[in-house]
Image (cartoon, rainbow, N blue to C red):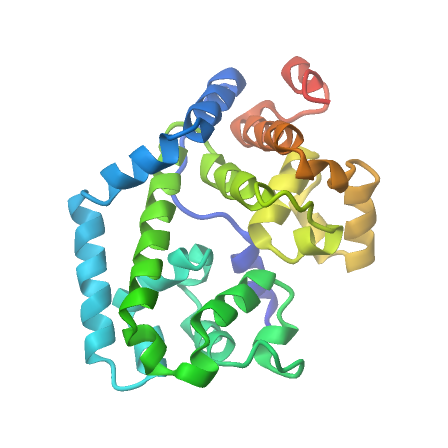
Length: 259
């Protein structure tokens, strides 16, 4: 994978608003409150732009002659990739085709070799290597993708209140499984990497260092095992949105409260 593609996948996406640190944390807490996502996603599903995107998604699949045609269709990728947690991959359709059509169980496959583990998860969910177009035409699979896309659009809308909210919500959802990620799982997921390194104040240039160097930089600053505790995960997510809203310096008095 080229350096330009790697940087693109590690970058953020969407339009964000910059807020002061206190407002950013308050916005994240509102979005994380019980019932907020269910209510927000239901409202998002009624938006005209979301309905149109879903209609075009279904049209793209129905007219595609094969999987590659479907995955290269912007109408399909605009819904499918965000639904699978890969919104930052819509500009690399070639990679999407190669990764999502490869067998995640084959250690020599394209998807197995990618450092970003979101691809492997997506390929496993779709199972295109074995099911092909049958998977994309499966009503149950389509509904799962539509639900995922709508949830993504809701999370993304929260960035209009403060930068980094969508990333933080993704992070909290991943941590809600109760199983703390290893440092390599963090480094292997572009969003988790952004949240953890951003919360710790580590520079973006860390991504070009050796993996072991990146791992040490993280583990020397935070005990990832504690993230199985929702309260600890929430604290780190809040540190991230504070950092994303220009309050991330080590000397920030607000950040010191989350140490």
